[in-house]
Length: 200
Length: 184
Image 1 (cartoon, rainbow over the protein chains, first blue to last red):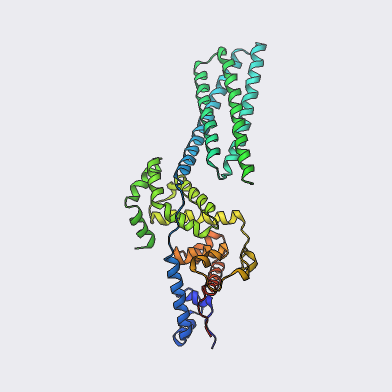
Image 2 (cartoon, chains in turn green, blue; image 1 turned 30 degrees about the vertical axis):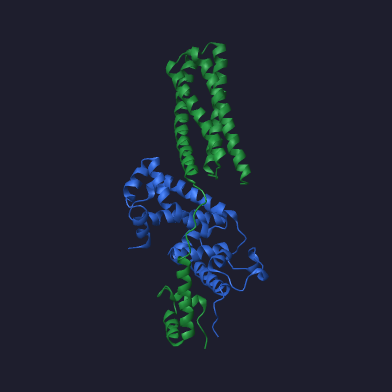
Protein backbone atom coordinates (compact mmCIF):
# COMPACT_ATOMS: atom_id res chain seq x y z
CA UNK A 1 0.00 0.00 0.00
CA UNK A 2 1.35 3.43 -0.98
CA UNK A 3 1.07 5.87 1.88
CA UNK A 4 0.21 9.52 1.50
CA UNK A 5 3.12 11.87 0.89
CA UNK A 6 3.85 14.75 3.22
CA UNK A 7 2.59 17.09 0.49
CA UNK A 8 -0.75 15.26 0.43
CA UNK A 9 -0.96 15.27 4.23
CA UNK A 10 -0.19 18.99 4.39
CA UNK A 11 -2.83 19.61 1.69
CA UNK A 12 -5.39 17.69 3.77
CA UNK A 13 -5.00 20.29 6.51
CA UNK A 14 -6.58 22.84 4.15
CA UNK A 15 -9.37 20.74 2.67
CA UNK A 16 -10.69 21.42 -0.79
CA UNK A 17 -7.62 23.34 -1.86
CA UNK A 18 -5.94 20.61 -3.87
CA UNK A 19 -6.95 18.22 -6.65
CA UNK A 20 -6.95 14.63 -5.51
CA UNK A 21 -8.10 15.49 -2.01
CA UNK A 22 -11.07 13.12 -2.22
CA UNK A 23 -8.80 10.17 -3.04
CA UNK A 24 -6.41 11.14 -0.26
CA UNK A 25 -9.28 11.35 2.20
CA UNK A 26 -10.49 7.93 1.12
CA UNK A 27 -7.02 6.51 1.65
CA UNK A 28 -6.85 8.15 5.06
CA UNK A 29 -10.06 6.43 6.17
CA UNK A 30 -8.60 3.07 5.18
CA UNK A 31 -5.03 3.55 6.43
CA UNK A 32 -4.47 3.95 10.19
CA UNK A 33 -0.78 4.69 9.67
CA UNK A 34 -1.50 7.71 7.46
CA UNK A 35 -4.22 8.80 9.89
CA UNK A 36 -1.60 8.71 12.67
CA UNK A 37 0.82 10.65 10.45
CA UNK A 38 -1.80 13.35 9.88
CA UNK A 39 -2.42 13.43 13.60
CA UNK A 40 1.30 13.90 14.20
CA UNK A 41 1.28 16.77 11.69
CA UNK A 42 -1.60 18.44 13.57
CA UNK A 43 0.26 17.97 16.84
CA UNK A 44 3.47 19.42 15.39
CA UNK A 45 1.61 22.51 14.22
CA UNK A 46 -0.04 22.84 17.64
CA UNK A 47 3.37 22.63 19.29
CA UNK A 48 4.74 25.27 16.89
CA UNK A 49 1.91 27.57 17.92
CA UNK A 50 2.66 26.89 21.57
CA UNK A 51 6.34 27.82 21.35
CA UNK A 52 7.20 30.55 23.85
CA UNK A 53 7.08 34.12 22.55
CA UNK A 54 10.53 35.59 22.00
CA UNK A 55 11.07 39.11 23.26
CA UNK A 56 13.68 41.76 22.46
CA UNK A 57 16.45 42.03 25.02
CA UNK A 58 16.16 45.81 25.25
CA UNK A 59 13.79 48.65 24.50
CA UNK A 60 13.96 49.88 20.91
CA UNK A 61 11.34 52.60 21.04
CA UNK A 62 13.96 55.34 21.53
CA UNK A 63 15.50 54.43 18.15
CA UNK A 64 12.06 54.37 16.48
CA UNK A 65 11.22 57.76 18.01
CA UNK A 66 14.57 59.19 16.84
CA UNK A 67 13.89 57.97 13.30
CA UNK A 68 10.43 59.53 13.38
CA UNK A 69 11.83 62.86 14.60
CA UNK A 70 14.51 62.68 11.92
CA UNK A 71 11.88 62.05 9.27
CA UNK A 72 9.80 65.00 10.45
CA UNK A 73 12.85 67.26 10.41
CA UNK A 74 13.62 66.20 6.86
CA UNK A 75 10.11 67.14 5.81
CA UNK A 76 10.41 70.51 7.55
CA UNK A 77 13.88 71.15 6.09
CA UNK A 78 12.68 70.27 2.62
CA UNK A 79 9.75 72.65 2.95
CA UNK A 80 11.86 75.42 4.50
CA UNK A 81 14.60 74.88 1.90
CA UNK A 82 12.20 75.26 -0.97
CA UNK A 83 10.72 78.37 0.66
CA UNK A 84 14.13 79.89 1.34
CA UNK A 85 15.26 79.21 -2.20
CA UNK A 86 12.20 80.92 -3.59
CA UNK A 87 12.56 83.91 -1.26
CA UNK A 88 16.28 84.27 -1.97
CA UNK A 89 15.71 84.02 -5.69
CA UNK A 90 13.18 86.83 -5.57
CA UNK A 91 15.59 88.92 -3.45
CA UNK A 92 18.38 88.28 -5.90
CA UNK A 93 16.22 89.43 -8.76
CA UNK A 94 15.39 92.60 -6.88
CA UNK A 95 19.06 93.30 -6.09
CA UNK A 96 20.28 92.59 -9.59
CA UNK A 97 17.50 94.61 -11.07
CA UNK A 98 18.19 97.58 -8.80
CA UNK A 99 21.99 97.63 -9.24
CA UNK A 100 22.21 96.52 -12.79
CA UNK A 101 24.84 99.07 -13.71
CA UNK A 102 27.09 98.58 -10.65
CA UNK A 103 30.09 96.24 -11.38
CA UNK A 104 30.65 95.51 -7.66
CA UNK A 105 27.02 94.60 -7.15
CA UNK A 106 27.07 92.48 -10.28
CA UNK A 107 30.09 90.52 -8.99
CA UNK A 108 28.42 89.95 -5.61
CA UNK A 109 25.28 88.80 -7.36
CA UNK A 110 27.29 86.36 -9.45
CA UNK A 111 28.82 84.91 -6.29
CA UNK A 112 25.41 84.60 -4.70
CA UNK A 113 24.04 82.86 -7.77
CA UNK A 114 26.96 80.42 -7.75
CA UNK A 115 26.56 79.60 -4.05
CA UNK A 116 22.82 79.09 -4.47
CA UNK A 117 23.44 76.78 -7.42
CA UNK A 118 25.90 74.79 -5.34
CA UNK A 119 23.34 74.53 -2.56
CA UNK A 120 20.74 73.29 -5.05
CA UNK A 121 23.15 70.63 -6.34
CA UNK A 122 23.80 69.39 -2.80
CA UNK A 123 20.07 69.42 -2.07
CA UNK A 124 19.56 67.14 -5.07
CA UNK A 125 22.32 64.77 -3.92
CA UNK A 126 20.74 64.61 -0.47
CA UNK A 127 17.34 63.79 -1.91
CA UNK A 128 18.92 60.88 -3.76
CA UNK A 129 20.72 59.60 -0.64
CA UNK A 130 17.61 59.97 1.54
CA UNK A 131 15.48 58.08 -0.95
CA UNK A 132 17.62 55.00 -0.52
CA UNK A 133 16.27 54.49 3.04
CA UNK A 134 19.18 52.73 4.61
CA UNK A 135 19.24 51.52 8.18
CA UNK A 136 20.63 54.23 10.44
CA UNK A 137 22.39 53.85 13.76
CA UNK A 138 21.68 56.17 16.67
CA UNK A 139 24.95 58.10 16.28
CA UNK A 140 24.33 58.87 12.61
CA UNK A 141 20.72 59.79 13.33
CA UNK A 142 21.92 62.27 15.93
CA UNK A 143 24.58 63.77 13.63
CA UNK A 144 22.09 64.15 10.78
CA UNK A 145 19.44 65.66 13.08
CA UNK A 146 21.94 68.18 14.45
CA UNK A 147 23.02 69.29 10.96
CA UNK A 148 19.44 69.52 9.76
CA UNK A 149 18.50 71.64 12.77
CA UNK A 150 21.29 74.06 11.92
CA UNK A 151 20.24 74.18 8.27
CA UNK A 152 16.64 74.86 9.32
CA UNK A 153 17.90 77.69 11.53
CA UNK A 154 19.89 79.15 8.62
CA UNK A 155 16.81 78.96 6.42
CA UNK A 156 14.92 81.00 8.99
CA UNK A 157 17.72 83.60 8.94
CA UNK A 158 17.62 83.66 5.16
CA UNK A 159 13.90 84.32 5.32
CA UNK A 160 14.47 87.20 7.76
CA UNK A 161 17.19 88.66 5.51
CA UNK A 162 14.74 88.66 2.66
CA UNK A 163 12.17 90.47 4.82
CA UNK A 164 14.71 93.21 5.55
CA UNK A 165 15.60 93.40 1.85
CA UNK A 166 17.91 95.88 0.10
CA UNK A 167 21.45 95.75 -1.20
CA UNK A 168 22.92 96.35 2.27
CA UNK A 169 21.95 92.79 3.24
CA UNK A 170 23.52 91.17 0.20
CA UNK A 171 26.82 90.51 1.99
CA UNK A 172 25.02 88.91 4.93
CA UNK A 173 22.95 86.87 2.52
CA UNK A 174 26.06 85.59 0.77
CA UNK A 175 27.57 84.60 4.14
CA UNK A 176 24.42 82.74 5.11
CA UNK A 177 24.26 80.88 1.81
CA UNK A 178 27.92 79.90 2.08
CA UNK A 179 27.31 78.60 5.58
CA UNK A 180 24.33 76.67 4.28
CA UNK A 181 26.45 75.07 1.55
CA UNK A 182 29.03 74.04 4.18
CA UNK A 183 26.38 72.36 6.33
CA UNK A 184 24.78 70.68 3.33
CA UNK A 185 28.20 69.40 2.31
CA UNK A 186 28.71 67.93 5.79
CA UNK A 187 25.26 66.33 5.64
CA UNK A 188 26.05 64.68 2.30
CA UNK A 189 29.29 63.40 3.85
CA UNK A 190 27.40 61.81 6.76
CA UNK A 191 24.97 60.08 4.40
CA UNK A 192 27.75 58.85 2.10
CA UNK A 193 29.79 57.54 5.05
CA UNK A 194 26.75 55.74 6.44
CA UNK A 195 26.08 54.15 3.05
CA UNK A 196 29.68 52.99 2.85
CA UNK A 197 29.59 51.56 6.37
CA UNK A 198 26.55 49.42 5.73
CA UNK A 199 28.19 48.14 2.58
CA UNK A 200 25.47 49.13 0.16
CA UNK B 1 -13.72 36.21 15.78
CA UNK B 2 -10.39 36.01 13.93
CA UNK B 3 -7.08 35.48 15.71
CA UNK B 4 -5.95 39.00 14.76
CA UNK B 5 -9.12 40.50 16.25
CA UNK B 6 -8.55 38.57 19.45
CA UNK B 7 -4.99 39.88 19.60
CA UNK B 8 -6.25 43.43 19.01
CA UNK B 9 -8.81 43.32 21.77
CA UNK B 10 -6.28 41.76 24.10
CA UNK B 11 -3.37 44.08 23.35
CA UNK B 12 -5.07 47.37 22.57
CA UNK B 13 -8.69 47.86 23.47
CA UNK B 14 -8.95 51.44 22.13
CA UNK B 15 -7.06 50.82 18.87
CA UNK B 16 -9.27 53.17 16.86
CA UNK B 17 -8.55 56.27 18.94
CA UNK B 18 -4.83 55.46 19.18
CA UNK B 19 -4.62 55.10 15.39
CA UNK B 20 -6.39 58.44 14.96
CA UNK B 21 -3.81 60.07 17.23
CA UNK B 22 -0.88 58.47 15.37
CA UNK B 23 -2.35 59.78 12.11
CA UNK B 24 -2.12 63.37 13.35
CA UNK B 25 1.46 62.84 14.51
CA UNK B 26 1.00 62.27 18.26
CA UNK B 27 4.28 60.65 19.39
CA UNK B 28 2.72 59.39 22.64
CA UNK B 29 0.16 57.44 20.60
CA UNK B 30 2.93 55.85 18.54
CA UNK B 31 4.55 54.73 21.76
CA UNK B 32 1.26 53.18 22.90
CA UNK B 33 1.12 51.23 19.63
CA UNK B 34 4.73 50.19 20.04
CA UNK B 35 4.24 48.99 23.60
CA UNK B 36 1.13 47.05 22.61
CA UNK B 37 2.56 45.26 19.58
CA UNK B 38 6.30 45.18 20.26
CA UNK B 39 6.31 41.58 21.55
CA UNK B 40 4.31 39.90 18.76
CA UNK B 41 6.17 41.87 16.08
CA UNK B 42 9.55 40.86 17.52
CA UNK B 43 8.46 37.25 17.91
CA UNK B 44 7.38 37.10 14.26
CA UNK B 45 10.60 38.78 13.13
CA UNK B 46 12.80 36.55 15.27
CA UNK B 47 11.10 33.39 14.03
CA UNK B 48 11.74 34.43 10.43
CA UNK B 49 15.16 36.11 10.69
CA UNK B 50 18.33 34.22 11.47
CA UNK B 51 19.79 36.63 14.03
CA UNK B 52 18.54 38.68 16.95
CA UNK B 53 20.12 41.76 15.38
CA UNK B 54 18.13 41.31 12.18
CA UNK B 55 14.94 40.80 14.18
CA UNK B 56 15.62 43.98 16.15
CA UNK B 57 16.16 45.91 12.92
CA UNK B 58 12.86 44.50 11.59
CA UNK B 59 11.14 45.60 14.81
CA UNK B 60 12.40 49.17 14.34
CA UNK B 61 11.67 49.19 10.61
CA UNK B 62 8.15 47.92 11.22
CA UNK B 63 7.16 50.67 13.65
CA UNK B 64 8.81 53.34 11.53
CA UNK B 65 6.76 52.06 8.60
CA UNK B 66 3.64 52.01 10.78
CA UNK B 67 4.20 55.69 11.57
CA UNK B 68 4.78 56.56 7.91
CA UNK B 69 1.97 54.47 6.44
CA UNK B 70 -0.72 54.63 9.11
CA UNK B 71 -2.79 56.68 6.65
CA UNK B 72 -3.11 53.55 4.50
CA UNK B 73 -4.75 51.60 7.32
CA UNK B 74 -8.46 52.06 6.69
CA UNK B 75 -9.68 50.38 9.82
CA UNK B 76 -11.65 47.78 7.87
CA UNK B 77 -9.65 44.91 9.39
CA UNK B 78 -7.89 44.17 12.66
CA UNK B 79 -5.01 46.52 13.41
CA UNK B 80 -2.79 43.59 14.37
CA UNK B 81 -3.47 42.03 10.96
CA UNK B 82 -2.20 45.20 9.29
CA UNK B 83 0.85 45.62 11.55
CA UNK B 84 1.66 41.92 11.21
CA UNK B 85 1.61 42.25 7.44
CA UNK B 86 4.05 45.17 7.63
CA UNK B 87 6.30 43.16 9.98
CA UNK B 88 6.22 40.05 7.79
CA UNK B 89 7.09 42.10 4.70
CA UNK B 90 9.97 43.77 6.50
CA UNK B 91 11.28 40.41 7.77
CA UNK B 92 11.09 38.84 4.31
CA UNK B 93 12.73 41.92 2.83
CA UNK B 94 15.54 41.47 5.37
CA UNK B 95 15.97 37.84 4.29
CA UNK B 96 16.24 38.86 0.66
CA UNK B 97 18.62 41.71 1.44
CA UNK B 98 20.94 39.55 3.45
CA UNK B 99 21.07 37.07 0.59
CA UNK B 100 21.23 34.14 2.96
CA UNK B 101 22.76 30.98 1.55
CA UNK B 102 19.57 29.39 0.40
CA UNK B 103 17.94 28.55 -2.89
CA UNK B 104 14.43 27.43 -3.64
CA UNK B 105 15.34 23.92 -2.57
CA UNK B 106 16.25 22.56 0.82
CA UNK B 107 19.89 21.63 0.54
CA UNK B 108 21.80 20.12 3.41
CA UNK B 109 24.93 21.92 2.32
CA UNK B 110 23.08 25.22 2.13
CA UNK B 111 23.11 25.88 5.85
CA UNK B 112 25.76 25.81 8.55
CA UNK B 113 24.96 22.40 10.06
CA UNK B 114 26.75 19.35 8.74
CA UNK B 115 24.85 16.09 8.62
CA UNK B 116 27.09 14.46 11.23
CA UNK B 117 26.43 17.36 13.60
CA UNK B 118 22.72 16.63 13.63
CA UNK B 119 21.63 14.96 16.83
CA UNK B 120 19.38 11.93 16.57
CA UNK B 121 16.55 13.82 18.10
CA UNK B 122 16.13 17.59 18.37
CA UNK B 123 13.59 19.68 20.20
CA UNK B 124 11.12 21.64 18.12
CA UNK B 125 12.77 25.00 18.78
CA UNK B 126 16.15 23.71 17.55
CA UNK B 127 14.62 21.93 14.57
CA UNK B 128 12.74 25.07 13.52
CA UNK B 129 15.92 27.09 13.85
CA UNK B 130 17.76 24.58 11.68
CA UNK B 131 15.41 24.97 8.73
CA UNK B 132 16.64 27.17 5.90
CA UNK B 133 15.31 30.74 6.16
CA UNK B 134 12.70 30.59 3.42
CA UNK B 135 11.29 27.27 4.65
CA UNK B 136 11.17 28.50 8.21
CA UNK B 137 9.43 31.67 7.11
CA UNK B 138 6.81 29.67 5.20
CA UNK B 139 6.21 27.31 8.15
CA UNK B 140 5.81 30.18 10.56
CA UNK B 141 3.65 32.35 8.32
CA UNK B 142 1.37 29.46 7.30
CA UNK B 143 1.14 27.24 10.35
CA UNK B 144 1.42 29.79 13.13
CA UNK B 145 0.32 33.15 11.73
CA UNK B 146 -2.35 31.63 9.53
CA UNK B 147 -1.48 33.13 6.15
CA UNK B 148 -2.64 31.25 3.06
CA UNK B 149 -0.17 30.00 0.47
CA UNK B 150 -1.45 32.67 -1.91
CA UNK B 151 -0.79 35.42 0.64
CA UNK B 152 2.68 34.05 1.38
CA UNK B 153 3.41 33.83 -2.34
CA UNK B 154 2.41 37.48 -2.70
CA UNK B 155 4.68 38.57 0.11
CA UNK B 156 7.61 36.49 -1.14
CA UNK B 157 7.08 37.35 -4.77
CA UNK B 158 6.87 33.62 -5.56
CA UNK B 159 4.09 31.22 -6.53
CA UNK B 160 1.63 29.46 -4.23
CA UNK B 161 3.10 26.13 -5.41
CA UNK B 162 6.49 27.26 -4.16
CA UNK B 163 5.01 28.00 -0.74
CA UNK B 164 3.23 24.61 -0.63
CA UNK B 165 6.35 22.79 -1.65
CA UNK B 166 8.45 24.59 0.96
CA UNK B 167 5.91 23.77 3.65
CA UNK B 168 5.68 20.04 2.91
CA UNK B 169 9.45 19.65 2.60
CA UNK B 170 9.96 21.58 5.82
CA UNK B 171 7.49 19.29 7.64
CA UNK B 172 9.25 16.22 6.29
CA UNK B 173 12.49 17.62 7.71
CA UNK B 174 10.97 18.56 11.04
CA UNK B 175 9.41 15.11 11.36
CA UNK B 176 12.78 13.49 10.75
CA UNK B 177 14.73 15.78 13.08
CA UNK B 178 12.18 15.43 15.84
CA UNK B 179 12.68 11.68 15.75
CA UNK B 180 9.03 10.94 15.08
CA UNK B 181 8.47 7.29 14.16
CA UNK B 182 8.23 6.55 10.47
CA UNK B 183 5.54 4.65 8.61
CA UNK B 184 6.33 1.15 7.45
